[in-house]
Length: 253
Image (cartoon, rainbow, N blue to C red; front, side, top):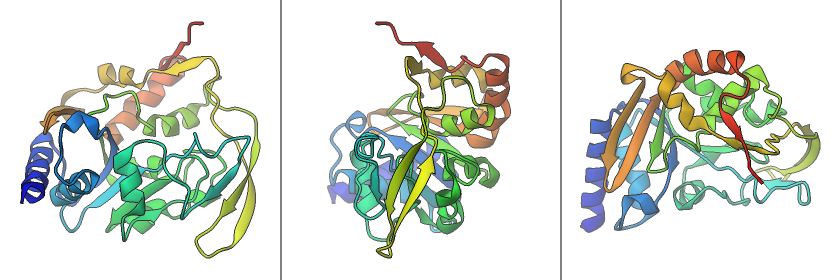
């Protein structure tokens, strides 16, 4: 009963924060920010689905850049864990979840537009290229929910950076080995992200977004930020073209 009540409360609070029923929602999350959640990550996922409704599409990044490395450049789409928290890792293993094919920047999804958003990511040779779910989000009137984690860990910003290619973005090309769901394998050359000597400051997007393009709310004990992807794509590339270092800062020794 406690988990059921928490699911409804999460769903209701997400709707009050501005999540659109039937919409496309990409979620970055911190489980600990929510406080004690009966049922843990499953309750959070069900609360997200409750808010979106039967026609919605839920996406969570399943990033694996800490596990798929130059020293171990192997990605197994069915078994490589995500390294970005308890909620996305639970979502990855949940029945019915699909995962896009990328060695370090895959995305998991369920819902009406899951196939349309995920299919094709395997054809990109960069993390957040033109066929990635991140880049497709604004074309589907998508929203980005930062659930208790602030504005910095916004992977969609990488897709915007790839449009402009600031000098810090890419590292050396690498060959990754992909283990696919049908048991086949493939080798592919990728241009991974670099960022050597730079710290990401995607929270600076806040000053660029006006009105309903960025909403704030509360879900359980967490502060949430809800961004309109289309609005972010309208202002952030121009800021980056004016100043290629707008969204980074030097790491001090």
